[in-house]
Image (tube, rainbow, N blue to C red; front, side, top):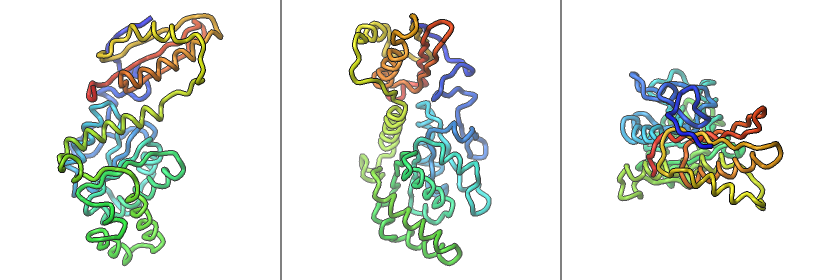
Length: 293
């Protein structure tokens, strides 16, 4: 059974956003706050460098693609230490994107955010995708130019062990695979934004890909039957019901279909619900937009 219908905010599956819950830019330039675990991507950036330009374009494109994004605004911060809400948002995010610009290292908050992202990456809990915005990784590695000036300034009024951690963080992130803005399509930012969104989508799908046995017998015909009813150009919400007695493989079938939908249709979010009383597996497929189609 396949049923199409418009998305309702109270019925949205994990990974989907409605107009009432999706992060958005507020009047003060900040981001509407969700719970830390509700974010998929954390953006770290130096507000003075990129807030109203590149970062704003990237944030908007990610949100338009149905991705829940935490965008911190260092221009609105109070104090020198990262608060628990911000720390939670970094830790709970699946992906962090530090947008490292010329004055990134001059902000203690940015350096603290970077240190926390890298801690999460080392523990295997997070993917870090750096963007080197109009700077080269070697500038961080060797503390050249503004990066060297910023670290020298921090050494005068910050704990030396903390500054050492920041220096190590800059060196570590400089070796990660990311994007150098000036080397992408001769510096055309629209191309860079699209590549980042595509990469983020790919990583999120990989993280949510369900494990199924490699050798499955007698399932191909059932998968083909379901997929033959799926329109590759659909938008909104579809509900696919899989019925049958217990123990015949409904859950496995739903997982296989789920994984195929992630790849073939570039679905933003899927939700599996087992209806025990009905001996049914219900697969909700929700698509926020056709941004990448």
